[in-house]
Image (cartoon, rainbow, N blue to C red; front, side):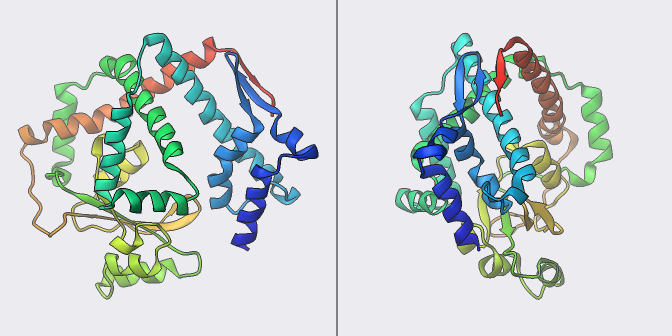
Length: 311
């Protein structure tokens, strides 16, 4: 069934003749004069469609497919607005910046260049596509730092109050890794999680045996946690954990998943004093404030833009 769905989606994206070609060449949106075609939209939506088992050619999936398309289109529009704003502000990302990010990813996954590129192929991606996505992410971060970050204030009183309320979670985070296990839909995730909880099975053993994620051979290890790059959902999840903890089963893009926070080689938990914890707390409190201001900022970009959605 999955192979059939992948084939249908591939055909949807690669068939460029007759009526279908006309459909793919249609304009999905125009953002300040820049066109987003249906082909580009469908290509960007493909991973979400596959994760949710949706077939665009099946009338029964029409409503869900439309929801995915509109969500992805919204992200594409924002990418264009950010890129246009970056051009106005003369902000750019150099090829070496992107190279450094890719090197970090390979190092975190303990992969050679060849292994990494082969993994991208298995994920139906490419180095060029990855570089484009990294460039968008870095541009967003630079714009956020310039236009949003400097306006966010975290007071000493807020830091003190957070420390008093969360002393038990204030530990040294340096060197911590995150393990992610994405369960195959064919297995009983709750039963396996119970085995991990009881100690009958380690997280690493379970990931190697049951995970469908590309890092399964490494026991789910995703490499060092980059705390300053976590989105609010992941930051909230990991901040509540201590080294050695494994989350309960949760939904991750249509699959059951678990996360393991650990320090390679083991080692105890070093609790931080108030002074040591200050930078960590500042980052924790700053992130949601920055995201709120960023939402306001991008909302203003939208208001000033000429956006014509034609879905």
